Length: 317
Image (cartoon, rainbow, N blue to C red):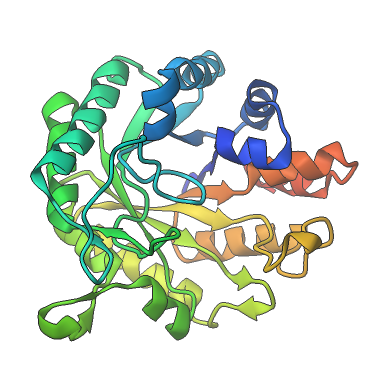
């Protein structure tokens, strides 16, 4: 019988969005019993305030014996996606590709190296995630990151530590959304870059292909083949010797308006379990649920359904 590892992503930035105090919220998430928690090293925040907040979160995870996936780079968990310090600005081409301009690339790689060097002795860290959805267009500027720059970031991580590297992509939702998130590349922009394929070409042995799977945005539902596509990438990754993970499985609403956050039309608590079960059936054995801050926010308003479903998933039904 396959053992399923469950996890979630936690962001202090999302806590601020929901009016949650960071440390109590994180302790509540850790207490749910997840095997893995994904955290981000936010470049702008660390440049401004130092490492104290991230140090504290890692201390809590270690005390609870939870493993951590730590994202490093310019792009991290939560909108606006890119977290650049004041005075640091990338050069981007017409497609939105952030180029490997020497001074900017050196700054990114220096930050990545500083984070890995600081935390590589932390036994709780299970893997390093280099950037977040690097090859999908996102954020206010619709930027994406040059694969050559990502390759250099990965090399910087490998020079300092031997733990697996995760690269992730926004997985198939619909033809329209897929086209929107995939940048045009090649002469005259004749083709669209497929993020999953690009990632598989960059991964080394024992590295991880991560997929972000969402099934409902507002009143729009993902194409019926979303789970089949995820299963296809699972087979491709394993065929190359890489481990496939679901880094984000939708487990909260994705509303078109903040006015419906308390009574969502896009996603219900029972949908969390349905998505999870489809991914297990597709063959995934590491699945991180997205939305823990929302669950806690709803629980603070006496709606404990989201936390209850998450807890049932962690306990195996």
